[in-house]
Image 1 (cartoon, rainbow, N blue to C red):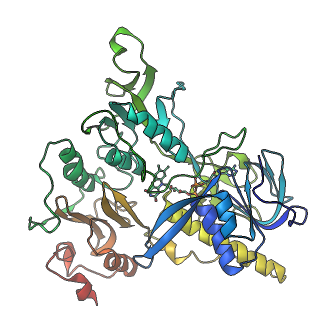
Image 2 (image 1 turned 90 degrees about the vertical axis):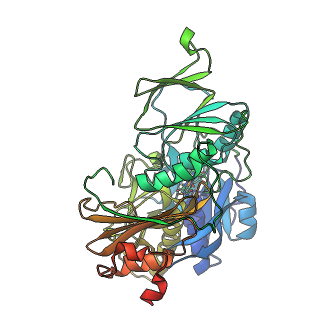
Image 3 (image 1 turned 90 degrees about the horizontal axis):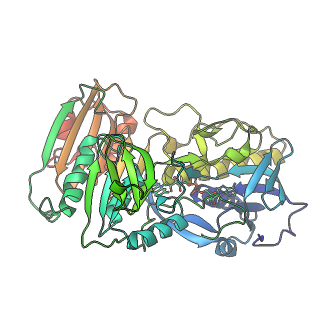
Length: 503
Ligand SMILES: Cc1cc2nc3c(=O)[nH]c(=O)nc-3n(C[C@H](O)[C@H](O)[C@H](O)COP(=O)(O)OP(=O)(O)OC[C@H]3O[C@@H](n4cnc5c(N)ncnc54)[C@H](O)[C@@H]3O)c2cc1C
C-alpha cells in the first residue's frame, strides 16, 4: 500500500485537517476548506482509489441543486489540489484523546481537526450463503460485476424497494425481473402508492407490452386532478490490501456507460408486493434444477433465477470508531448541525452520520448524495472556523444555527427517465394522516404532481416530469402561506399561472 504523495511536508505527521473518505461528503469537505484557505494543510485518506466530485452544479431553487457526480483517481485529485496530501489506505482506529488516526498499513496521522466521511456499507443479506450469484449494488466494482453477470442471464430476482432497485428496473434490458418488495407499492422510501402507480402504468406496464406506448409530451391528453383526504394511516476499483471495505457509494448516474442487458429479446417485470425473501438456496433438489439459484419467499413461493440482487439499503460505516464517539448501531455517528461529533475536534458528514439536532418542521435526514454534499460542505466550514478561532485563542465555537439547507428537505433525481423533485414532507412524513389533504395532477406518461396540505398550508410536494413548479412550491412550504381560499385543486390547475398569482 502506497501513499500517493510523500509525507515529508507534514511536521511529524501532524495535519491541520484530516478527512477520511473520498466520497461526495469527504471531497466536498476538502473543497470547502480550500475555498477558505487554498494553502490549508489537508490530508485525505481513502480506502478507495477513486474519489467522487460534484460537478456542473445548477441551482434550481434556494435549497435544490442538481449536479453530476464525477469519478477521478486519487492521483488526479492531487494534481488539481496541490496542497492536499492524498493517501490510499484504510483507517482502522481513532484515538480521540491524543488526536491520532491509525491505518491498516500501520501509518499514524495526528490531526488538529478531523472529519469522518466513511459513508455506508450495504446491509448484509441475512442468509448464510456466500455465492457470486447473490449480489449487492454499492460501488463501481459491484456494478461492473453485476453487468458481467447480467450478460448471461435470462431472469433475475431483485430484492429491495429503494432508489437503487427502482433505477435497476428501469435500466436493465433483455431480461425477466422478479421484483420482490415488502411494501404495497414500489419505491416506497421516495413516494406513496399514487406516485408509484404513475411509474408502473407509464413505464413498467408499457415495457411489458401491456399498454400502448406513451403519447408525445405535447399531447392534448386530459390532465386528471384528484383530491382526497387520508382516512387511514395506510396511505401514507482497486482495493487496499487486506481491506474488505467498499469504495464510495455510486451516485445517481451509476448505470451510465453500463450495458445492463440480459439474454432475452425484451424485458419483463413482475412485481411481487408485500413479500420478503426468507431464504436463498443454490440449485439442488429435483424441483429446483431449472435455475442456478432459488429464493424462498414469505408468501411460500419458491422462485428460481440466474441471479439474486439485494438492494436493501446501507448501514453507516463506523464500526472502526469503537466507543470513542457517540453513535448508535444502524444510525451512525451523532452530529450537531455544525457536523460536530461528541469528541472535540472531530466532525462527521454524509451517510456515516446521524443528524442529531432539532430538525426544522419540513426537513428530515435521508442518505442521499445531496445531503452528503451539504453535510460535507458544512463540516469543512465548521472545521475551518473552529481552527481559525482556536488559532486566535478563541473558545471552540458554539453550535451554529442549522444552515438554511436544513430548513426544508429537497432532492432532485431521475426515476425511469423522469425528473423527480421531492420537497418537504412529500409523503406526509410525521403528519397526522387524518389531517392531510392530498391533491394530485396526473398526465399519464408526462407528469405527476402530488401536494400535501394541512389546514390550508402546503407541507410537501412530489413533482415528476418537467413541471417547472419547484421554486413556487418550495417558497409555499417555507413561508407557510395560508392557501385555504385558493385550495389545492386550484393550485394545481394547469390553467392558473400560480407563479404569477404569488408574485
Ligand atoms: C447504486 C446506488 C445508487 C444511488 N443512487 C442515488 C441517487 O439516485 N440519488 C442520491 O441522492 N443518492 C443515491 N445513492 C446514495 C448516495 O450515493 C450516497 O448517499 C452518497 O454517495 C454518500 O456519500 P458519502 O460521501 O457519505 O459516502 P460514500 O460515497 O460511501 O464514501 C465513503 C468513502 O469512505 C471511504 N472509506 C470507507 N471506510 C473507510 C475507512 N475505514 N478508511 C478510509 N476510507 C474509508 C470509501 O472508500 C469512500 O471513499 C445511491 C447509492 C448507491 C449505492
